[in-house]
Amino acid sequence: MKKSQPKIALPHLALALGAVFFFMSGVFFSNVVGPGNFNQPLLASALIPVRLHQSEYPLINPLLLCDVGNAAESTQNKDLRNKILTFINDRVQQGKAIDMSVYLQRYGGGGWVGINESTLYAPASLLKVPLMIAYYKIAEENASFLDQRVTFRGSDRNGNEYFKSSQVITPGTSYTIEDLIRHMIGSSDNTATALLESAMASTTREDTYSDLGIPIPPTDPSAEYLSVKQYAYFFRLLYNATYLTREYSERALQHLTDVDFVQGIRAGVPPGVTIAQKFGERTVINQDGTINRRELHDCGIVYKKNSNYLLCVMSRGNDFNQMARNISDLSSLVYNAVSLPPSPTPY
Image 1: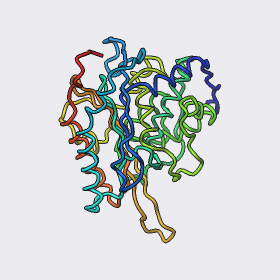
Image 2 (image 1 turned 120 degrees about the horizontal axis):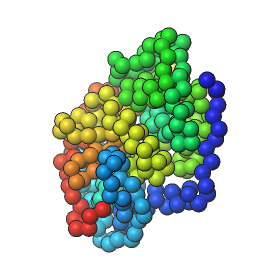
Image 3 (image 1 turned 60 degrees about the vertical axis):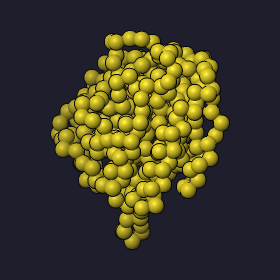
Image 4 (image 1 turned 30 degrees about the vertical axis):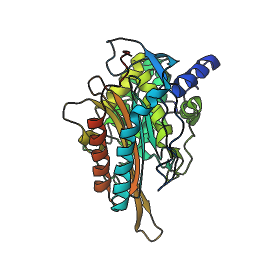
């Protein structure tokens, strides 16, 4: 298989419109960044999205345009925001977390809430989602590309993971590109990821970040450079179908519904609720080999009846199991609090 693929060039007009869609897709209700500085809200404004009603692709909700709505509606998330702030402060004070960052997007005109949403983290396995997006952007022009096969001849790269999957690729086996994407997302397989990274030109991967105005990953995998709000763009563009076609946006989200990580956001919602999610973990080691801290992140779209929402959490702590409980407890809090927005207008 060739080591590089042609860059994907998007029309400037499409990029400009896409940028408008990304930044005009909800009610803005934010919070100033910084540990211990959770109580400084920023001015909010309301924007009403107009979406395409369709049933062919159940996981996406194509965004057509946005219109200015009633700014007073921005206050509807005040109680939920305060509950999230109290939750984070309690976990930090109890020593169960070093810090947590939250981005919540409520669809159907429900607005968004950000807590510490600009704090930077090392995204770790969360970056498997933009790699999948980059491959599907290539497939839009050459669908047969996903049928090309790659044989795994190296060694397993999942040995250092805390949350392991039993469904990983095996040496000596041939896989299609689509198979590798499925393993990379569903099992968070680092070996499948390495094969996909080596099969694509770095400039092609970087195009996805550049198109969205998101920082390109540095060469140091431990660098903390991405915020929870920035990362949420990848899920937003899939749900809105504003970057990939509807077919490939739907396919990407379908892979994300098959993730076998049952902790975190998944553990905080009732069984049977569909979630398209991706998690990432990272351990920071001191020079003497001891553990400095850990990071655990989880981001997903929860398809609650009549109240779909996107919840992204990035966190630092000392114990992965406790951090997973923090995310699942927060997920439960949000699930129980989110309901239909007060506006009677259907979107």
